[in-house]
Length: 93
Image (tube, rainbow, N blue to C red; front, side, top):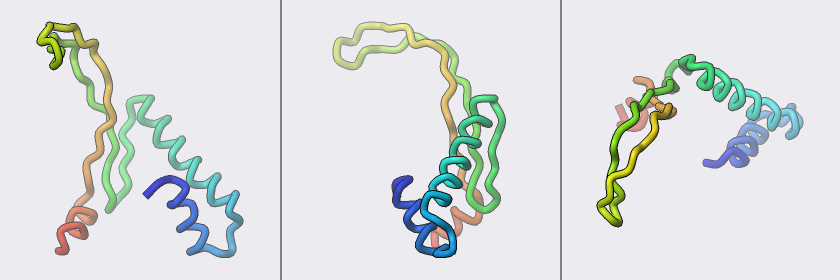
């Protein structure tokens, strides 16, 4: 599901809301999650899952095409861990 499909679905389920308001709500939620992660905070949506940031140290990697050693800088990556409710629903429990 894309962001625009999510907006469309929410708008269909809530006909009393204007489409532009639904779009603003969805964008605000995503912006707040992004801002929290960029600050290093953890975002937990009960029953759905938790977003956090993992740190990867600098390392020596390998170019798969040439086999040559390359230095890979340290980086921070987003990480998502599913909640129990979502896992159970996906596994039909």
